[in-house]
Image (cartoon, rainbow, N blue to C red; front, side):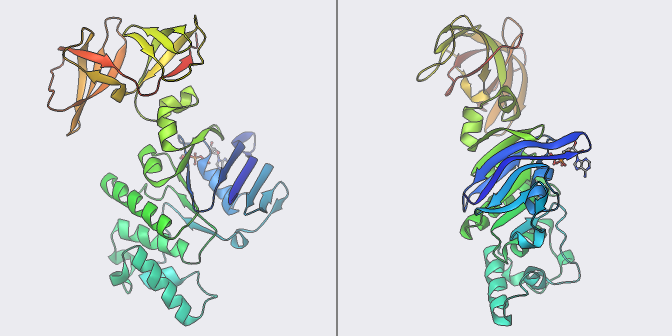
Length: 347
Ligand code: ATP
C-alpha cells in the first residue's frame, strides 16, 4: 500500500482533532478527506506531511514508517509535495523559477527539462517568464501544482486548493487538476469541505466526522450506498421518509411500498427512515399519487421541486424544466429509487 494510516490520533489539550483515523491509498490513486469544518481534515493532512506529531497509531508510506507516537520523520525527508489554499508562490520569482524551486539536486539541463515538462502539462508554457502577480488566480493555482509535482514526490497533499477561487473557476480547475495528477501518475490526497470538488477530483473519498472516517468509498457508493445516516445527510440532497419494514426488502411508506433491489437486510416490523434522493422521485402525470409543489428552484435543464405530501412530509424531485409547475399545484409523482437506503429510526 502506498499510503496507510492506522488508528491515527492527534489531540490538542483535551480535544481530539483526529481520533482513530484509518485508511489506505494505492499508488496513483487520488484520495480525498471530506467533512464539515472542524472535523479534523487539515490536522490529518498536517500529520501526514509531518508538521504535526501523532499521539497514537502509525502513518506509513510505501511500507516506511513516517510517524508513530514519539517517532517522526522530518517533513523534508517524507518525499511529500504540498499545495496549500493560499498558494505561497514566491512573488519575486518567475513562473519557471517557482516551478524549479525544489529541483536543486538536478543538473541545469535536467531542471530546465523538468520545468518545461510540468509547464506543458499545466498549460502554462507561454507564461514561463511572468511573475505570479501577472497571472490569474487559476493560473497561479496551476503553478503551485506544478511546483509541488516537479520534484516527483511520492505523495502530493492538497489542502483546500480551490477555496479562494470563484465557483466557476473552481469547477474547471478541479477537472484540470485531476487530469494533471492522472497524466503524471501522482498519488494524491486532497482535503476539502466541498463535496462537488471531492467528487470531481478524487477516486476515493473519506467522509470525516469528529476526527474519524464515517465511510471511505468511491463517490458513487457514498451517494448511492451511504453507510451511515451522517453520510447520507452530508452527501447529496435528499429527505428521509418514515417507513415500516414489511419484508426484508420492502418498506411501507406514505407513498406506497418501496422495494429494494437484491437481498434486503431489514427486519419486518422495524421502523425506518427511508432515504429518497431528488432523482428517486419522478414526475408522472398518469400517477394517482400526487404531492403539492411548495418550492421550486430553476436549474436550467431541470427544476428542483420541493413537494409536500398529505402528512406534511417533504420530498425533493428533479424534473426536466419544460414541466413548469407553479407553487400550490398538485403534480403526479412516482417513486423509483435506484438504491433503497434505510436507517433504523431513532425514536
Ligand atoms: P476546517 O475545514 O474548518 O479547516 P478541519 O476539518 O480542517 O476544519 P482541523 O483544522 O483539523 O479541522 O481542526 C480540528 C479541530 O482541532 C478543531 O476543533 C480545531 O480547533 C482543533 N485544532 C486544530 N489545530 C489546533 C491547534 N494547533 N491547537 C489547538 N487546537 C487545534
